[in-house]
Structures are given as C-alpha cells and as structure tokens.
Length: 316
Image (tube, rainbow, N blue to C red):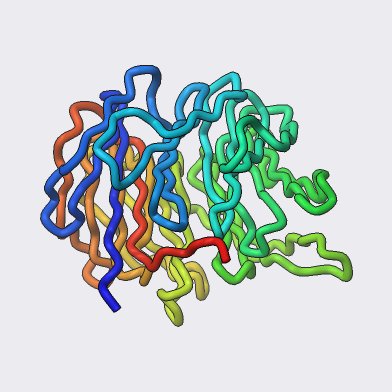
C-alpha cells in the first residue's frame, strides 16, 4: 500500500490560503481569498476538497487542482462562519456562525438542508462520533446538543455564565467532551448514554489551563492510543499538552511569538500543527515538544490550519 499523501493548508488575515509540503516546509499553492478573512479550514474525509469558512460564505476548493476558483459556494449564513466540518463519509457538512445558527449542508445539493437557532454567536461546533449529534458553543456561554435524528436541541448547559465558549472537542470514542472558554478554563465532562439515545454530560474535571484566552482545544485521535492528550492553544502564545489521565501538564510548546489560534494533530497523534498571529504555522513533535518545521509565507496573522495525513475515507 502506498503511503497516503499529506494535505496541509493554512489561512491568514492576508486573504490567502496556502498549501504546504509538510516535510520540506515549501508552499506549493496559494489561493487568493479577497472577499473576507478565512476563519476555519477543513479537509473532506476523501481528501478531495478543502472547505474555507469566511464571512459569510463557505467555499469549497479542489485540493488537487491549480484553479483559484472554488468548485462550490454555500451562501445562507449572514455573518462570520466560525466552524465547519464533515460527516465521516463526506455526505454532508455542518457549520456554525456568528449569525447565531448551526446549519447542515448536503454536499451534493445546493442550499442549506437544516438550520438550528442558538440565539447567540456560535464560535464552535463539533460532530459527535456517533454522527447523529452536533454540539455547539456560543458567545453567551451556552453549550447545546443538536439531535439530528429528532431534529431538535436535546441538551443545554452553561458551564460559566456570560463567558464565551471558544472551542469544543470530543474524544474519538465519544467518552469525553471538553469546552474551552475566554477565561483560560477547560470544562471536561464524561458523556454518558441514557436509556434514550440522548447524550448526558457528567462533570469530570475543571482545568485552569491558561491565564489568557483559549482559542482552540483538541483531544488526540484514535491512533494515538493508549496515550490520550488534550492540546490547548492560547493567546499567551503557547500550546499546552495535557495528559487526559488526571489532566496533568505533559508539555508546553514554546516558540510562537503571538496568539496561537488553531491546532491539529497528525493522524497518529505524534505531531501537532499550530497556526499563530506571528504569521507562521509550526510542526511540533509530541515526543520532544520541539518545533521541527516552521511554515513561513503568510504576511499577516495565520489563524487556521487543516491537516489530513490519514487514509482516505469515502462513502460506501
């Protein structure tokens, strides 16, 4: 079997999206994105497309093309799109926006298929591994579970009143969810299945991870097992790596000069890519905590990154 290709992309306030050779650090493709900033990037499970969440559109670009034009545009949000992601076999996409809505899009059909009202600017949305629940976090501090089967909000909780939830992450096996907020705090819950399909949150831990904002929190992927880590990227210019067993601090990744906006693990959890206001993205070794590659080319803050270095997953 041939080694799967590595897709690495970053976006910046300089209105460009850049694709990088992960090992060499060479930028091999630049897409101009003049209409707005790009808030979030995500690669489809089959590695064919890159979604760029802007204001207020989501654009889908062909990963293997040289065309600067998007292949599709998704247009019914009315403000910054802050979250975007895909169902595991790439049939549909979800998004969350500062317009207060969470939306679902069928990639093979134009227009938005479903819309959920969060009633406050949505900062983060994650898909539960069961593929039937979306979890959103908003500017007012609300976390909501959207049951896609029942087509309704099945659960609401507010870990800290009036403190914006910036980032949510779910463990690959659905056992934990972590919410990070503007006060540098991570709330950790166990996810329990009741007699119904509804997910119940059992408080497990409260972690004061940073003094500044946490801009992104991320749990390690399945192939990182038996190690389980939580990465927290912060306005204090560091990324901290926590051992999920007891939430002890494992490492602090020091090297960025300004806010660290985003991070993404490699498929085996051995590496972490980060994006920062210092204009760079970096590749870190999880074993040493050192940065082993700096991706330089953006002229302004680099605010999001996407990586897909695993096998391609396609719809059956």
